[in-house]
Length: 370
Image (tube, rainbow, N blue to C red; front, side):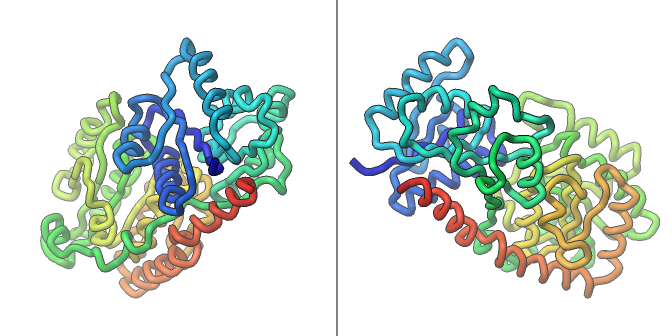
């Protein structure tokens, strides 16, 4: 019986951590490693994994189904040669800890996708976390946060960042037709923000910065790419109202959901990430890989991704005046913009390329798989 890696991600949502779980399952499948992912039935992750032929073990949502789900998981562990459990959502750790009672030889690798805000070094969390052989953090700053708040020895916490497919996100995908569609001419400065329409993502901050820019730059467009959070309407109408109040109707384009993100990223002049907080900020490395100058809020792990003035610019979260100044600097200095874009591409290739990051993940899993 071949050894199995059981990945656990029982989230019913679709976002960064679910995307990582999807990519991990696909990676392991492509490497001919037996992987089964524990998912919530009907979740976006479950549907996407089934579509590409990845094996899933489905559980039902809700506390009332906890006992049945636990029985399903223990039955799977009993009848399959599971060597490693990879937990993508740390709130699933308790269920995994219970299920692993009696399975002392199975190793556990955890992945933290968010900063931890409170200490979890009490007796309960020590018991939950003591089965973990490795915990994956996304950046060095994130690692320090986990060391401070989680009951895990520092030597067990390794840094493996999110990755970007640098063949998919690359400057060759720059689309002149897109630029012509959004700009009056090729001289129009295209400033984009890619992400769901949500207050925490900071579209409002970028619009305030755009209002400040009008006095210095006339030929620019703000491209807001994304749709509202599912079942949470209101963000789009609020942003459109803000555009009207700031007199930005001619400068702002709402694209809605788009599937051609690599083409969009490569066609921008400046990519902005203005979130209140981000553990990593995957869109930053997508912009860097596309050889586009990036400006991001100095939030969370962003400080480990951007080298100020070399691979991008940072500004204090919520500070639209500082953001406007950084945009203005790049708009007036094409050589600096090109230099930052080039350096960003080089860093994406050396540190965040999917093949390189995947190898580090495989090495970590391999250390527990045998």
